[in-house]
Image (tube, rainbow, N blue to C red):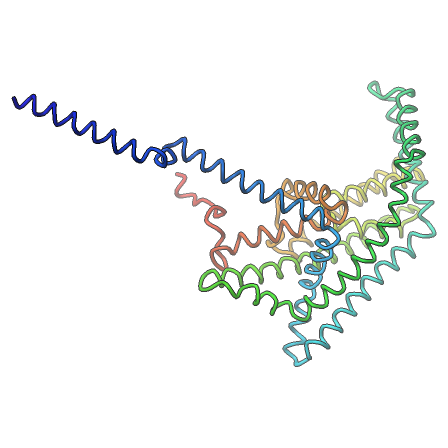
Length: 384
């Protein structure tokens, strides 16, 4: 009899469990492993869709976004000067006008230097580089795996057909629109820069009004870190570029390489593109030396470029920028690629400081010196 009662009780419990499971089945499916996997997959899809939308908006509004980012970077670079003038009682409007004039004069001086150094010697520089490429190809033709003359002729013919095609002509006509966009972007840049210099801190405080407590403190840390990293990048990169240009200029003059000043100017400009810029400048200088002075001189030029870049990378750059701009070379290359795809040359120049700023924000996410939890290094004693 007791066994019969136990069997009836077990049947009742089983029936009750089935009923409860059936009642909560529609939502309990999300709690099992496959349900959690589906939730994570949906979250990833949403994040990717939002990121794609942001990138599409940036790519579609480069006339606005690029001047905005450049203005933010320049305002961050001159933020110490603005703070110094405010502490000494200079009115905001006067301090802003003085700083803005200094920035415009500096940019104009750099542009004038580029035009002065390159306009009379650009054709010679181009012909020298072209001659260096031809000599290099002539040497490549001596190798067993070199392309045949017919293949080279086909490549040159294809390039000539593109230059004479309507596609190239339409691209050249589009240059008029590019000039108009440049003027519009420059005016917008100066206007945004004026307001960033004058009201930047107040604008950031306005954006932080909805936040309270720890979230507000985090917003303050993000703003301070962004200004610090961007300012350090501009000041440090400009100094490094100037030192690189002067060092390579001295080496080219000692080696007797022609067109040393235009090459130094290009070194200064390309130094704002990490890794890739130094490589392109070194190749161009070596090609000019190859045509003018031969293989031995070209190798000496390569040695000078490598020496200057090593001194800059190992001593000058860490001293000027510190750990705030310390990024792995792989991260820099990925950032350069993404920036070039989204914004061309300007995007490649802006990609690294934006990436460094994002990493700097991660480093202060949970405190002034406390990174986000997922970015903290694992303790060695926990690994043992």
